[in-house]
Image 1 (cartoon, helix red, strand yellow):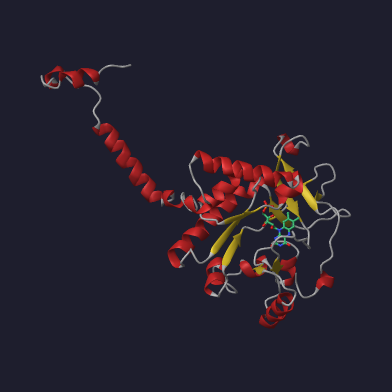
Image 2: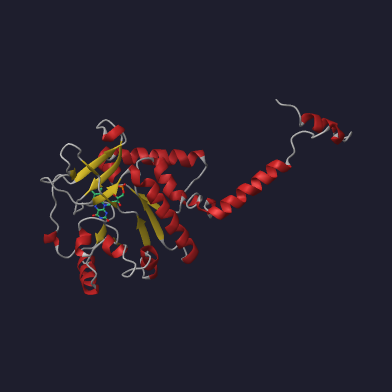
Length: 291
Ligand SMILES: Cc1cc2nc3c(=O)[nH]c(=O)nc-3n(C[C@H](O)[C@H](O)[C@H](O)COP(=O)(O)O)c2cc1C
């Protein structure tokens, strides 16, 4: 939602798929999705108004006031939409401009937001039709860069969520704030990964557009199966559990050198017959057996 709805005019086609098959083969698995859509429909559970305005305090205040009066449950403030709106200094134009807004997640929490949802789509050019030389999605022969989503963005989203979760843990009391993981979620395993990196909820967009609502049921079953396997009885039992395994590259090198040193220290066999100790001959014999 933004103040001037008249400027939100959609075109068709507005989506383009990226397939994993050779040379974009139409038979390959869909791994990426680009959209240049400007409007959004809402599910009928809790209603979160996703709002976006130009870089104007009075504009934001008016928008928040008007949307609040509709009785919505929460706001999502969009500093991340990469397409359509940046032309009007909205969405990613604000979120990616470090002068306007230093690090968006940190600033949002410091300014009173109760949670972070990441990621939105990523600015992309989906591809060029090699017969017509026109870009996709093609509208009357022309296109515009769009927002990339689906499986292909999942690792990028995991990286962003991991960084935000670490920041929330280090600088905020993360029990009081929520983090929602979004990007390429199609399976219970994808959802579990976001939760293991600190997300308390997970959202799905393109997955449901491609596979329909039955996907959500399957995802929940797979997530429950993962939890049973590890004996987790709640999301909190494993939320953020993998964060501690991230470290610096320098530390990885140090750990590896230490592991190599320890492996070398566990001596395999005797270097020479002079090393037989007498009393320890059973272990010494065993250390030279190959099976
Ligand atoms: C067709 C389409 C429309 C979208 N509309 C919005 C929107 O209005 N506001 C918003 O914040 N994000 C919007 N998104 C971004 C999604 O909420 C989500 O952050 C992104 O697509 C990555 O998740 P996914 O891989 O599950 O699709 C849209 C995405 C798609 C594909």
